[in-house]
Structure formats: C-alpha cells, structure tokens
Length: 249
Length: 312
Ligand SMILES: Cc1cc2nc3c(=O)[nH]c(=O)nc-3n(C[C@H](O)[C@H](O)[C@H](O)COP(=O)(O)OP(=O)(O)OC[C@H]3O[C@@H](n4cnc5c(N)ncnc54)[C@H](O)[C@@H]3O)c2cc1C
Ligand SMILES: Nc1ncnc2c1ncn2[C@@H]1O[C@H](COP(=O)(O)O)[C@@H](O)[C@H]1O
Image (cartoon, each protein chain N blue to C red):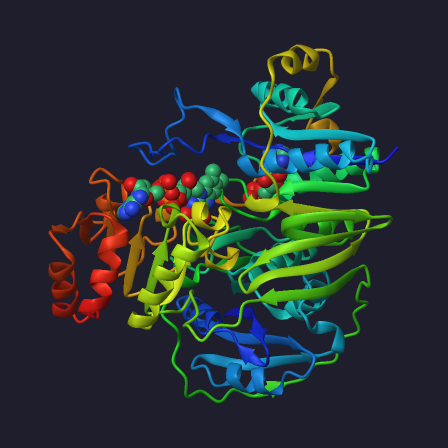
C-alpha cells in the first residue's frame, strides 16, 4: 500500500493575538482557541489530493501532543485522512523528539512520502522535517509550493529567497509545505459524522521508546519591545517633507 | 574557548551579505574563535571574501562539484564532519540556512536554536516565538554542540579588512545521490536585494492587480528601494513569492519601510519590527498598520502614490 504520512501539530490559532503571561513563564493559553497548524492543514490537503489523483492509497495523520489533540485529529479525518495516530506526550516536545517519534511511525508504516509543515507557528522552529529526513537518511524537499509524484521520484518546487527552485528527490522522502502549495478544503458536516468511524490510534511516547525530555530550557518569555505609535500626516507633501527632514529620502 | 563554525551561503560566486551578520552574532559569544566553512564547486573567490571579514580566524574551503547548486542533503554530512572540533555551528536564517541547519543538527545529535536575535552567553540566547509576539530566553545544555540559525535582521554586518588563512581540509564523506537540482527561476533585477536594502517599498492586496503593482515598483525605483509585498499580494499573483515580507516570508530591517495598501496583520508586522522608520499609506484610518507606523497617511493609494512620486 502506498501511504502518505502527515504531521499535525496543535497550536494557538493564527488569529489569536498572543500575549505573554505576566510572570514570564509562558504565553496566555487559558480560553485561547487552539487549531491545527496552518501549514499542516496544507500538508494534509496535499496528501488527500495525491490520493484522490490515485497516486497514493492511504493518508495517515499523526500528532505528538496531549490527549485533547484528538479533536484536531478528528477534524483531519473529516477533511479526508484515512486514519490518525496520536502519540501522547507533554504539550512541549522539541522538534528533535517529534522527529524521532515520527521516525518510529515511519518504521512501522513505511510511507512513500511524509509531508510536514514548513514551520509550527507557535515555536517558529522550522526544524522537524529536516531533522526527520536526516534521522531517516532520506532526501528532503522543504518549503514546497508544488509537489508532483512521478513513479519513484517527486519533483518539488520550493519557495527560496531567490525565487522558485525545482529539485527532484527519490522516494521515500520528506516534504515540508509552504503557504502557496494549495488551499485546504472546508470540512462538510456529513464528513464530520463519517470521521467518527475512522480509526484513531493512541500510543504513548514512552511506548515508542522515544525520550521526550527537552534539551533546551526556556528560562523566560518576554513581550517584545513595542514600537511607539508615530504621527499622522495630512497629505503627500507633508509626508515627503517629514521624510526629507529626517534624511530618509 | 568557544569554537564557532559558520556555514557560508553564496550564490554565483558571491558570499551572501548574511554571513558577515552571522560573524557579528558569533563575535558576541565570549572567548569566540570563528571559522567559516565554504562548500562550493570552485570556491576561491567566496573563500577570499569570507577570509576578509574581521573576526574570522580561519576559512575551511571544501570544493566539490556536488556542492553547487547547494543541496542540504549533500552539504549536511560534510558540515557535520567538519564540525568535529567546534562547539557551535551557525548558519543564516535564510531559506538556505533554514533548510540546511536542522539537518546538520540531527546528524550531530544536537538541539537547534532558530532565529537567534541576541547572545547572552555561550549557551544562552534570545529568539522570537509566536510570530515575534514573545521573546524567549533559551538555555542550551553545556557540553553538547549547539546549532543555531541567526536572525540576520538583528545584527549589523561585521566589518571587512581581515585576512584569515584559507584551509582546504580533505574529508572522506559519502554524499547521497538521491536529491537532484533541476532549476531555479530567480527574477533578475537591478533593484537592491530585499533582505539587505536600506529602503523597502511594499504593496498589499489593495493594489488589485499585477499591472497596478507597477505603481509600487515605480516608487521603489524612484527611492532606490527594494520591492516587498504582503502575503495577500503574493497569493493573488501581483508579486512573486520572494518578495513576501513577514513571519513566513522575509524578516527585514531597512532604514525606511513604506507599506502601501497593507492592513498590518501580525504575520506581516513580524517581518518589519526592526525597520528604523515605518511609513503607512492606507485608506482605512483604523488599519492596524498605523499602530506601528512612524508616519501614517490616510487616503487612496492610487492618488497618493503618484503625488508622492512627483514630489520626490
Ligand atoms: C500561517 C500564516 C502565515 C502568514 N504569513 C504572512 C507573511 O509572512 N506575510 C504577510 O504579509 N502575511 C502573512 N500572512 C497573512 C496575513 O495574516 C494577512 O492575511 C496578510 O498580511 C494581508 O495582506 P494585506 O495587508 O495585503 O491585505 P488586507 O489585509 O486585505 O489589507 C489590505 C489593506 O489595503 C487597504 N486598502 C484597500 N484599498 C486601498 C486603497 N485604494 N488605498 C489605500 N489603501 C487601501 C485596506 O484598508 C486594507 O487595510 C500569514 C497568515 C498565516 C495564517
Ligand atoms: N507535536 C507535533 N506533532 C506532529 N507534527 C509536528 C509536531 N511538531 C511539529 N510537527 C511537524 O513539523 C512541522 C514543523 O514544525 P517545527 O519544526 O516545530 O517548526 C509542523 O508543521 C508539523 O508538520
């Protein structure tokens, strides 16, 4: 069976204005909306499209996180994943440990393609896919804006600083998604019902034999320095005069 | 002694300006000895440019036809081998470094700190999280290698005038053949490079079409500025992806940033926090961009931009 494994992290929803707790121990999460990382929805959408094109048989979505992530995994199943795996762990697992856990799943499932997001919008690390590819000793195609499967290879267009780069990787491989890869579909109500019957397996991080102890210690969180609100100018002439005065034009 | 290895990014035989900024970041680590690794096909000019950065003790030049164009899977095992004698391995937080450094970290069994914006000690660093809405102070374990990407907008380039020796170590590393470069489509432009430009003019969704986006380009040319764009403008096809500024695009720190028809979403603001002066032009007086703008002008961009152009 040709499988695709998708990684999904639950994060603070991208619409939430994140605030640091007064004691600096973290950010405010009480009553804050949590959602699938936007890049992971894009990863899932891509996997589903590949299966719909007949180029894969099964889409497995996996998350490493607390019990409650089941909700986001159910949504993923409603979107069109065939089954889900929750690796139960503390909410804060570092990319290294996530990659090691995903590697264990890969060893069991032998997917031909793994698709992760290019970055989780909470830690903004942008590490997991690359680390996974290294541990797995397979190619990586990061920041993808186009993925084409052609037999045993994938041709991937990547968003890089210079523009768009195209590379070819032998499968299996790890891809990470950029924003313009696709636009994820909306979930329809009947799909939510159907998703309830799809398998969602729960395993313990420890049972996978992965040590989730963080290597890095966050000592404190601080709010960033705020920019001062400036002045409003009344027209183009006043703006240009102000910029001239400051020597900016 | 902290021994820091910086992986050089280079294109078309030119060292990326981000590397002198990585050197300046590395120099703020106490008791630092800095080396630069140049992996190239023919890297003599790049190595010479790296050797001329002040504060660099040594350049390690690895020449191999497989090293260009750069592929993370090919470079990572070589850098990992080279890293044996080093305590830190740094790279720029550009797409080159973001792609490569975690692969190196994994091979070294080391943790990575992404987007380092300040150095507190050899093991303690500050980095933005949550799209820059929080700054985390992070401690890495002592006695283990530390891999990091450097948020280049946070550092001034180290000066030139150095003359470090260039060494050419021989490494016997098996390189994978499973990744092949096909092509790159990079828009050639005479405008300054977005990430190092002193002035940047950006356009948003309000431009409405690729044709109208020329308005932004004209103003940029008038100012000798680079052109940027919001995600909405890039998604709509008004501007190419490499122009996107923000959390998932480029993080920039120009002297002057002009945001035109851009609302100022958190993800966009993340990319411009370090700009010296921000100018915003928007027809909505309530647009969040005005909260961070040093100079705000409310009005229709289609009348204001040509007016400004005439006044320059
Ligand atoms: C995971 C994630 C990552 C993201 N990363 C980025 C990123 O890196 N960079 C980024 O920019 N965005 C990013 N976004 C998107 C971001 O949330 C916003 O959607 C985007 O920045 C909006 O672009 P905009 O300001 O051009 O468009 P809009 O928000 O639609 O704003 C258009 C503005 O133009 C004004 N306007 C309209 N007509 C005129 C006129 N004639 N004259 C003057 N003003 C006019 C309007 O008042 C409005 O304020 C990301 C989103 C997500 C979810
Ligand atoms: N806890 C997690 N569970 C599942 N996937 C994850 C997890 N953390 C990170 N990932 C995947 O790795 C990508 C990059 O995350 P990061 O390296 O943390 O920026 C995310 O977009 C996910 O696809």
